[in-house]
Length: 329
Image (cartoon, rainbow, N blue to C red; front, side, top):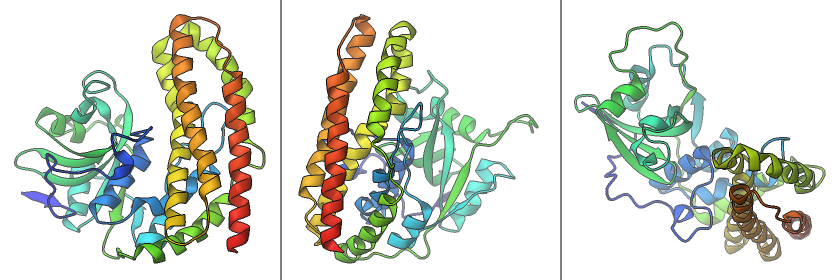
Protein backbone atom coordinates (compact mmCIF):
# COMPACT_ATOMS: atom_id res chain seq x y z
CA UNK A 1 0.00 0.00 0.00
CA UNK A 2 1.38 3.39 -1.05
CA UNK A 3 0.36 6.61 0.69
CA UNK A 4 1.15 10.04 -0.81
CA UNK A 5 0.31 13.55 0.37
CA UNK A 6 0.97 15.02 -3.09
CA UNK A 7 0.74 13.35 -6.50
CA UNK A 8 3.48 10.75 -6.78
CA UNK A 9 6.94 12.23 -7.41
CA UNK A 10 9.69 10.48 -9.38
CA UNK A 11 12.79 11.29 -7.35
CA UNK A 12 15.06 10.46 -10.32
CA UNK A 13 13.41 13.17 -12.44
CA UNK A 14 12.72 15.80 -9.77
CA UNK A 15 14.01 19.30 -10.58
CA UNK A 16 14.84 21.40 -7.48
CA UNK A 17 13.95 25.06 -7.20
CA UNK A 18 16.41 27.62 -8.58
CA UNK A 19 17.32 28.60 -5.00
CA UNK A 20 19.08 25.22 -4.89
CA UNK A 21 20.70 25.62 -8.29
CA UNK A 22 24.33 24.67 -8.84
CA UNK A 23 25.27 28.29 -9.56
CA UNK A 24 24.13 29.51 -6.13
CA UNK A 25 26.85 30.65 -3.71
CA UNK A 26 25.08 28.73 -0.93
CA UNK A 27 23.39 25.71 -2.52
CA UNK A 28 22.05 24.73 0.92
CA UNK A 29 21.26 26.93 3.91
CA UNK A 30 19.73 25.03 6.82
CA UNK A 31 17.64 21.87 6.80
CA UNK A 32 14.33 23.50 7.73
CA UNK A 33 14.25 26.34 5.21
CA UNK A 34 15.67 24.05 2.50
CA UNK A 35 12.83 21.57 3.07
CA UNK A 36 10.25 24.33 2.80
CA UNK A 37 11.75 25.67 -0.42
CA UNK A 38 11.21 22.28 -2.06
CA UNK A 39 7.86 21.51 -0.40
CA UNK A 40 6.48 24.79 -1.77
CA UNK A 41 8.15 24.39 -5.15
CA UNK A 42 6.69 20.89 -5.59
CA UNK A 43 3.20 22.41 -5.28
CA UNK A 44 3.83 25.19 -7.77
CA UNK A 45 4.15 27.79 -4.99
CA UNK A 46 6.92 30.39 -5.00
CA UNK A 47 9.15 29.99 -1.91
CA UNK A 48 10.76 33.40 -2.41
CA UNK A 49 7.68 35.01 -0.87
CA UNK A 50 8.31 33.50 2.58
CA UNK A 51 11.90 34.71 3.03
CA UNK A 52 11.28 38.06 4.74
CA UNK A 53 12.19 36.54 8.12
CA UNK A 54 15.93 36.56 7.30
CA UNK A 55 16.15 40.29 8.00
CA UNK A 56 15.47 39.64 11.69
CA UNK A 57 18.50 37.31 11.92
CA UNK A 58 20.72 38.01 14.90
CA UNK A 59 23.94 36.82 16.51
CA UNK A 60 22.82 34.81 19.53
CA UNK A 61 26.08 34.53 21.46
CA UNK A 62 27.45 31.29 20.00
CA UNK A 63 25.45 31.03 16.75
CA UNK A 64 23.49 32.98 14.17
CA UNK A 65 19.73 32.63 14.02
CA UNK A 66 18.66 29.25 12.63
CA UNK A 67 15.98 30.98 10.62
CA UNK A 68 12.68 29.34 9.67
CA UNK A 69 9.57 30.55 7.85
CA UNK A 70 7.02 31.26 10.61
CA UNK A 71 3.88 29.17 10.39
CA UNK A 72 1.68 32.25 10.32
CA UNK A 73 3.59 33.52 7.27
CA UNK A 74 3.01 30.23 5.44
CA UNK A 75 -0.72 30.48 6.12
CA UNK A 76 -0.94 34.14 5.10
CA UNK A 77 0.93 33.57 1.84
CA UNK A 78 -0.15 30.12 0.72
CA UNK A 79 -3.00 28.95 2.99
CA UNK A 80 -0.73 26.23 4.41
CA UNK A 81 -1.52 25.24 8.00
CA UNK A 82 1.26 23.63 10.08
CA UNK A 83 0.51 21.89 13.37
CA UNK A 84 2.56 19.76 15.75
CA UNK A 85 2.19 16.00 15.27
CA UNK A 86 1.79 14.08 18.51
CA UNK A 87 3.90 10.96 17.86
CA UNK A 88 2.04 8.87 20.40
CA UNK A 89 1.72 5.66 18.37
CA UNK A 90 5.16 5.82 16.76
CA UNK A 91 6.30 7.84 13.74
CA UNK A 92 5.27 5.29 11.10
CA UNK A 93 1.59 4.83 12.08
CA UNK A 94 1.17 8.51 12.92
CA UNK A 95 2.78 9.59 9.63
CA UNK A 96 0.65 7.11 7.65
CA UNK A 97 -2.52 8.53 9.18
CA UNK A 98 -1.58 12.04 8.06
CA UNK A 99 -0.55 10.94 4.56
CA UNK A 100 -3.94 9.26 4.18
CA UNK A 101 -5.46 12.67 4.87
CA UNK A 102 -3.31 14.33 2.21
CA UNK A 103 -0.93 15.95 4.68
CA UNK A 104 2.85 16.07 4.54
CA UNK A 105 4.80 15.19 7.67
CA UNK A 106 7.86 17.19 8.67
CA UNK A 107 9.99 15.38 11.20
CA UNK A 108 13.40 15.47 12.75
CA UNK A 109 15.38 12.51 11.52
CA UNK A 110 18.82 10.93 11.85
CA UNK A 111 20.98 11.72 8.82
CA UNK A 112 22.83 8.45 9.48
CA UNK A 113 19.98 6.67 7.65
CA UNK A 114 19.38 9.24 4.89
CA UNK A 115 21.16 8.12 1.70
CA UNK A 116 21.08 11.62 0.19
CA UNK A 117 23.73 12.58 2.77
CA UNK A 118 26.19 10.09 1.28
CA UNK A 119 29.68 11.53 1.52
CA UNK A 120 28.90 13.53 4.66
CA UNK A 121 26.73 11.86 7.32
CA UNK A 122 25.18 8.74 5.76
CA UNK A 123 26.27 5.70 7.78
CA UNK A 124 28.97 7.90 9.32
CA UNK A 125 27.50 10.44 11.74
CA UNK A 126 24.32 10.60 13.82
CA UNK A 127 23.12 14.12 13.06
CA UNK A 128 19.63 15.53 13.61
CA UNK A 129 18.03 17.02 10.52
CA UNK A 130 14.54 17.80 9.21
CA UNK A 131 12.84 15.95 6.38
CA UNK A 132 9.36 16.18 4.85
CA UNK A 133 7.72 12.80 4.29
CA UNK A 134 5.67 12.79 1.10
CA UNK A 135 5.29 9.09 0.33
CA UNK A 136 5.33 5.80 2.25
CA UNK A 137 5.07 2.38 0.60
CA UNK A 138 4.49 -0.03 3.47
CA UNK A 139 4.82 -3.19 1.38
CA UNK A 140 8.10 -2.18 -0.23
CA UNK A 141 9.33 -0.42 2.94
CA UNK A 142 10.14 2.69 0.93
CA UNK A 143 9.83 6.38 1.75
CA UNK A 144 9.88 9.42 -0.54
CA UNK A 145 11.02 12.56 1.22
CA UNK A 146 12.19 16.13 0.77
CA UNK A 147 15.54 16.91 2.36
CA UNK A 148 18.11 19.64 1.85
CA UNK A 149 18.08 20.68 -1.81
CA UNK A 150 15.93 18.01 -3.48
CA UNK A 151 13.55 15.05 -3.29
CA UNK A 152 14.85 11.58 -2.42
CA UNK A 153 13.91 7.99 -1.70
CA UNK A 154 15.09 5.45 0.87
CA UNK A 155 14.17 1.85 1.55
CA UNK A 156 15.19 -1.36 3.28
CA UNK A 157 17.31 -1.00 6.37
CA UNK A 158 17.18 2.80 6.16
CA UNK A 159 13.37 2.62 6.29
CA UNK A 160 13.44 0.15 9.17
CA UNK A 161 15.82 2.29 11.23
CA UNK A 162 14.14 5.60 10.43
CA UNK A 163 10.76 4.29 11.59
CA UNK A 164 12.08 1.76 14.16
CA UNK A 165 10.11 -0.98 12.42
CA UNK A 166 9.82 -4.14 14.50
CA UNK A 167 11.66 -2.71 17.48
CA UNK A 168 10.16 -3.56 20.88
CA UNK A 169 8.65 -0.82 22.99
CA UNK A 170 11.43 1.14 24.67
CA UNK A 171 10.34 3.53 27.44
CA UNK A 172 13.73 5.29 27.26
CA UNK A 173 13.34 6.23 23.56
CA UNK A 174 12.23 9.80 23.00
CA UNK A 175 10.42 10.44 19.68
CA UNK A 176 11.82 13.29 17.62
CA UNK A 177 9.77 16.42 17.02
CA UNK A 178 7.30 16.23 14.12
CA UNK A 179 4.69 18.42 12.42
CA UNK A 180 1.94 17.79 9.90
CA UNK A 181 1.16 20.14 7.02
CA UNK A 182 -2.47 20.67 6.03
CA UNK A 183 -2.77 21.35 2.32
CA UNK A 184 -6.56 21.46 1.92
CA UNK A 185 -6.65 25.29 1.94
CA UNK A 186 -3.66 25.96 -0.32
CA UNK A 187 -4.05 29.10 -2.43
CA UNK A 188 -2.16 29.67 -5.67
CA UNK A 189 -2.02 33.45 -5.81
CA UNK A 190 -0.50 35.34 -8.72
CA UNK A 191 2.96 36.79 -8.13
CA UNK A 192 1.79 40.38 -7.65
CA UNK A 193 -0.76 39.43 -4.99
CA UNK A 194 1.84 37.23 -3.29
CA UNK A 195 4.40 40.05 -3.31
CA UNK A 196 1.89 42.49 -1.81
CA UNK A 197 1.22 40.15 1.12
CA UNK A 198 4.93 39.45 1.51
CA UNK A 199 5.76 43.16 1.70
CA UNK A 200 3.56 43.38 4.79
CA UNK A 201 5.47 40.47 6.30
CA UNK A 202 8.75 42.25 5.58
CA UNK A 203 7.61 45.21 7.69
CA UNK A 204 6.76 42.80 10.52
CA UNK A 205 10.15 41.09 10.48
CA UNK A 206 12.11 44.32 10.19
CA UNK A 207 10.41 45.47 13.39
CA UNK A 208 12.04 42.42 15.04
CA UNK A 209 15.56 42.97 13.73
CA UNK A 210 18.41 43.59 16.21
CA UNK A 211 18.54 47.10 17.62
CA UNK A 212 22.30 47.19 17.11
CA UNK A 213 24.45 45.82 14.30
CA UNK A 214 24.75 42.08 15.12
CA UNK A 215 27.89 41.62 13.05
CA UNK A 216 29.75 44.09 15.27
CA UNK A 217 28.71 41.94 18.24
CA UNK A 218 29.85 38.82 16.39
CA UNK A 219 33.27 40.17 15.38
CA UNK A 220 35.23 39.93 18.69
CA UNK A 221 33.64 36.57 19.53
CA UNK A 222 34.49 35.19 16.10
CA UNK A 223 38.11 36.34 16.19
CA UNK A 224 38.53 34.73 19.61
CA UNK A 225 36.82 31.54 18.49
CA UNK A 226 39.12 31.12 15.49
CA UNK A 227 42.11 30.88 17.79
CA UNK A 228 40.40 28.15 19.82
CA UNK A 229 39.40 26.26 16.66
CA UNK A 230 43.06 25.98 15.64
CA UNK A 231 43.49 23.65 18.59
CA UNK A 232 40.17 21.84 18.23
CA UNK A 233 40.63 20.83 14.60
CA UNK A 234 38.72 20.71 11.35
CA UNK A 235 35.69 18.76 12.59
CA UNK A 236 35.01 21.41 15.22
CA UNK A 237 35.47 24.10 12.58
CA UNK A 238 32.83 22.57 10.28
CA UNK A 239 30.26 22.48 13.10
CA UNK A 240 31.15 26.05 14.06
CA UNK A 241 31.01 27.31 10.47
CA UNK A 242 27.56 25.83 9.95
CA UNK A 243 26.19 27.45 13.09
CA UNK A 244 27.71 30.85 12.39
CA UNK A 245 29.14 31.78 8.98
CA UNK A 246 26.81 29.64 6.88
CA UNK A 247 23.68 30.97 8.58
CA UNK A 248 24.94 34.54 8.26
CA UNK A 249 26.00 34.35 4.61
CA UNK A 250 23.26 32.11 3.25
CA UNK A 251 20.56 34.04 5.09
CA UNK A 252 21.46 37.37 3.52
CA UNK A 253 21.95 35.74 0.13
CA UNK A 254 18.32 34.62 0.32
CA UNK A 255 17.39 38.10 1.53
CA UNK A 256 18.98 39.74 -1.51
CA UNK A 257 17.15 37.44 -3.90
CA UNK A 258 13.90 38.03 -2.03
CA UNK A 259 14.24 41.82 -2.38
CA UNK A 260 14.89 41.52 -6.12
CA UNK A 261 11.74 39.41 -6.41
CA UNK A 262 9.72 42.10 -4.58
CA UNK A 263 11.13 44.72 -6.92
CA UNK A 264 10.31 42.61 -9.97
CA UNK A 265 6.68 42.60 -8.86
CA UNK A 266 6.31 46.31 -8.28
CA UNK A 267 6.90 46.61 -4.53
CA UNK A 268 9.69 49.21 -4.68
CA UNK A 269 13.30 49.82 -5.73
CA UNK A 270 15.30 47.47 -3.53
CA UNK A 271 18.41 47.30 -5.74
CA UNK A 272 20.78 49.15 -3.38
CA UNK A 273 19.76 47.11 -0.35
CA UNK A 274 19.96 43.85 -2.30
CA UNK A 275 23.46 44.71 -3.46
CA UNK A 276 24.64 45.27 0.12
CA UNK A 277 23.15 41.98 1.30
CA UNK A 278 24.72 40.16 -1.65
CA UNK A 279 28.04 41.59 -0.50
CA UNK A 280 27.43 40.13 2.95
CA UNK A 281 26.97 36.76 1.27
CA UNK A 282 30.09 37.08 -0.89
CA UNK A 283 32.29 38.42 1.91
CA UNK A 284 31.11 35.69 4.29
CA UNK A 285 32.01 33.07 1.67
CA UNK A 286 35.52 34.52 1.49
CA UNK A 287 35.72 34.60 5.28
CA UNK A 288 34.61 30.97 5.43
CA UNK A 289 37.47 29.86 3.17
CA UNK A 290 40.11 32.01 4.85
CA UNK A 291 39.04 30.77 8.28
CA UNK A 292 39.29 27.14 7.14
CA UNK A 293 42.85 27.76 5.93
CA UNK A 294 43.75 29.47 9.20
CA UNK A 295 42.38 26.56 11.22
CA UNK A 296 44.02 23.86 9.10
CA UNK A 297 47.34 25.68 8.91
CA UNK A 298 47.25 26.87 12.52
CA UNK A 299 48.66 30.15 11.35
CA UNK A 300 47.86 33.77 12.06
CA UNK A 301 45.53 35.37 9.52
CA UNK A 302 44.12 38.87 9.90
CA UNK A 303 40.39 38.34 9.47
CA UNK A 304 39.29 41.62 11.07
CA UNK A 305 39.13 43.59 7.76
CA UNK A 306 36.57 41.11 6.43
CA UNK A 307 34.38 41.23 9.53
CA UNK A 308 34.52 45.04 9.42
CA UNK A 309 33.36 44.94 5.79
CA UNK A 310 30.48 42.66 6.78
CA UNK A 311 29.35 45.03 9.52
CA UNK A 312 29.46 48.00 7.14
CA UNK A 313 27.40 46.16 4.54
CA UNK A 314 24.76 45.34 7.19
CA UNK A 315 24.52 49.01 8.19
CA UNK A 316 24.34 50.24 4.61
CA UNK A 317 21.89 47.56 3.57
CA UNK A 318 19.49 48.30 6.41
CA UNK A 319 19.65 52.04 5.74
CA UNK A 320 18.88 51.43 2.06
CA UNK A 321 16.05 49.05 2.96
CA UNK A 322 14.49 51.53 5.38
CA UNK A 323 14.77 54.28 2.79
CA UNK A 324 12.99 52.19 0.19
CA UNK A 325 10.22 51.08 2.53
CA UNK A 326 9.67 54.67 3.67
CA UNK A 327 9.10 55.64 0.03
CA UNK A 328 6.75 52.72 -0.48
CA UNK A 329 4.64 53.51 2.58
